[in-house]
Image (tube, rainbow, N blue to C red; front, top):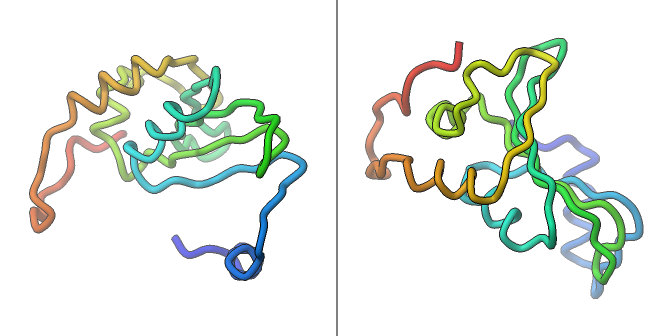
Length: 133
């Protein structure tokens, strides 16, 4: 998925800024489970949720916490769309989560699911697990 025009504009502005100071909420989209686990490890006292969108049924994992020091003062979240990561979703035992539902998870849950992930070579073109259905 490509970023929107607005996201590209902000990314350019942030790269050329000498200093960054965000006052307000910020959400980052992450691309893989390891990045989400990094956010869960770095943030202080994070809330970790698995949720399914009410309308589309899309599967998401979210790590969020309040952050009160520079460069971000506000609520910080990282979100992983899990349609491309069915093995991670299944390793978290979330296959019974229905559209519109949420489930609270822990850092330990994320760590265990990550440890259960099979290691595949970068040039391995096999399907990464059962479909989410």
